[in-house]
Figure 1 (spheres, helix red, strand yellow):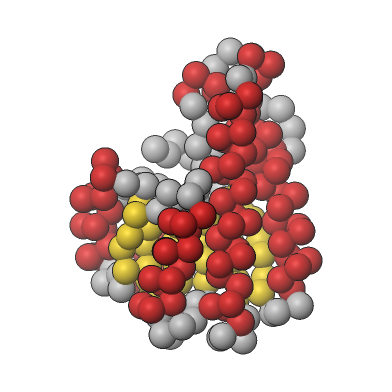
Figure 2 (tube, rainbow, N blue to C red):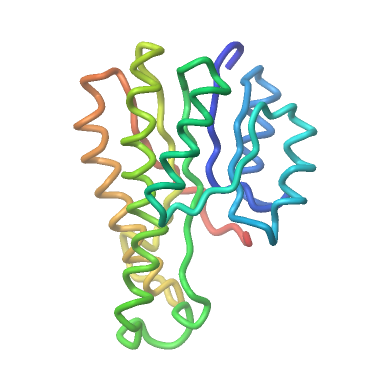
Length: 194
């Protein structure tokens, strides 16, 4: 990854999958930009970012089109108008929706889980495309889980969100492949994260 520039969405703490990916990319020579969820975790993420000499650390609410646009504008500025790699490691469902029965998931929290965990990839890919085209192509990577393919007890609405994410990966790969942009998902297996 020497000379490559990567934006990692979703660094939460030193145990997050996004952070493990960021560390490895840094070890292999990539320049990094990192996002965090907000004030509650920003200080910890900034400390982690210092250890990998991140060129940008910024807050990102993936449910806000304005915030996503701002993050990619800042990323373009930090990386001289280009981007080689986007890592999307963002997912959320209300804790109460990961207990009990899936059928009891209220509509508003159903759409929140799908919006944050799946649509955010679509929104980010749209903003990443011109930056990657400026580099002649790139790679987008997201994190999925088996719960999107089959029912996993207590995964509930997150499984539906991951199924949506998986389908989105296929359609984004179709759309962006013509621009030499690869879109893939990794199922890391069950990992306890924030």
